[in-house]
Amino acid sequence: MILYRICYAVLRLFLPLLLDIRITGSDNIPRSGPVLLVSNHDSYADPVVLGAACPRPVHYLGKRELFEHSRVFAWLLRTLGCVPINRDRNASSAIRKAEELLDAGGVVGLFPEGGIETTGDLKGGVALIAMRSGAPVVPVYLSGTWRMHEIGACLLRSCRVRVEVGKPIWVSDADGTSNRAERAERLMEALRSYIVRDDEAARGRITGARSPRRR
Image (cartoon, rainbow, N blue to C red; front, side, top):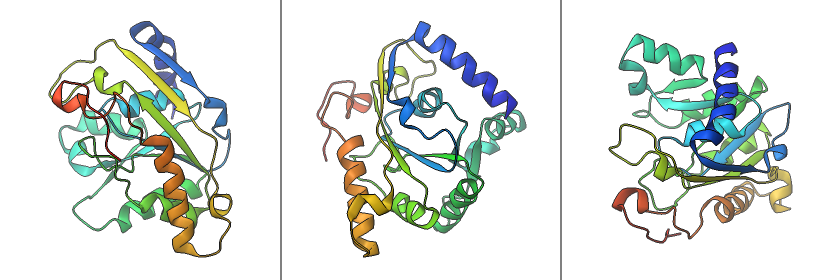
């Protein structure tokens, strides 16, 4: 992960020069052990910003097609912690891969909206991974990243970006019940209330105008 750490250091140094960026709550991320870093997804630049906000290397699950463009790009993705998954198959392979990374004590970044053209509906896989792995879930809210890289754009542009890192959530603390379905629902509701918000970051990245985010 030497290259990852170099890129991380460069990002932490130059992002404040390129963007009006403010990161709060990064000390909420445990410095050791498995962690699920869960964020809203408004831009293709989100993994870059999320990685810059985390003091530890972050692993992402990326669709296998991204690794087929070129050998150099595939090598770069793997070096930076991105793991290929086949999204055409069922979600079990992605869940197993996330669990493997967590079992090794790593940080896994997840965007449970499933894509940047969604309406804030969260996929329940994050709750399953959290319950099976026992890893704490750290919610992160990204604001303004859609301006960094709008759909169809080739370059990043300067803008105001805010990163809010919430306190860790353990499934056992999120619900107070032993019922798995209720535990999962309570965890998802806690995540939903933190990362799905009604503000200007909603659909503006798609329409070019500001529009409220739907829950």
